[in-house]
Amino acid sequence: MKFKQLQALKKRAYEAFAQGSRLDVPRQDASRLDSITLAFVGDAQYALYLRHRLVDTAIPNVQVLHLLAAEFVSAKAQAHVYRHLKTMLNDEEKAVCQRARNAHSQVPKSASVAEYHDSTALEALTGYLVMSNQSKRLDEVLDRVYVLTKEYCALQHGGKV
Image (cartoon, rainbow, N blue to C red):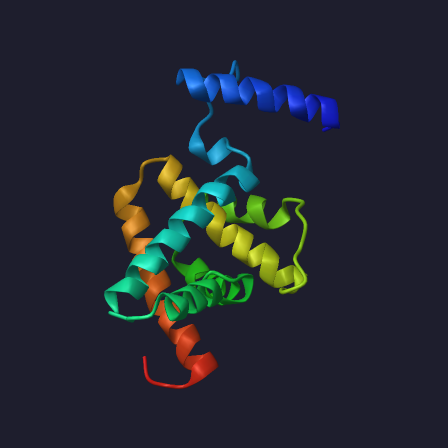
């Protein structure tokens, strides 16, 4: 998208948001939303869920909370979780993840290409469950994410799970 097109879309988006309306784009089923859009939503939900779990541990220092949260939502940690979680996914969830893995995006220097693609798949899965209002399934997946994140922590830093 060229700069002028981006600026025009941004202006329309501000207006729609301020008015509480939608842009003139057809509604889509959550499974058909753009993978990166699903990952955008999933990233926020995922981070909030893990931050909530961290606060529940009664860590008294916000700097430590932030450091742990940043590590646990990193592409490396999310890739670990995704690789162990994908066996419990149904066909539709697998399809969402596969589309997200194949989506073109900028890979940060802090992760390998494979780790970044796997973490994007996990975020898209989370976003898909949020956007399709599958709260029970979202809870099941996030409960498993929590277990796998604790396993990742034990592997990286020692300790029992």
